[in-house]
Image 1 (cartoon, rainbow, N blue to C red):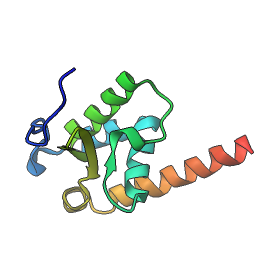
Image 2 (cartoon, rainbow, N blue to C red; image 1 turned 60 degrees about the horizontal axis):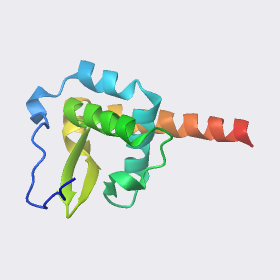
Image 3 (cartoon, rainbow, N blue to C red; image 1 turned 180 degrees about the vertical axis):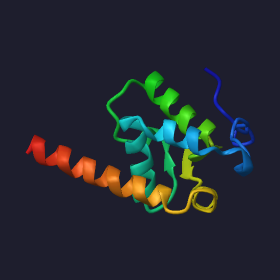
Image 4 (cartoon, rainbow, N blue to C red; image 1 turned 135 degrees about the vertical axis):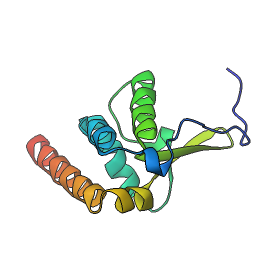
Length: 119
């Protein structure tokens, strides 16, 4: 597999005006994708794909990141050979005020309940 250059662009991000509530809600309906969003929201900065705590195969993880990207929830770009992820927080807040914060809060509660069951 050829290494990715930092010059390479990921081009399937929707424009802010094309982000739909339907697409965002469908993307966030999956618990793995909510976990990804929760981890990005809780990170001190942007997060590389290989640093997420998800329990799916790499191929399935790639699919989940693509769904989040194509729905407009995250933005991805290459930094060297790492694919970096960030939330499109400002654009989502403008289009759907409070939605992202509500989803992250709910995902935090889900994770806390799941951890309590495991303990």
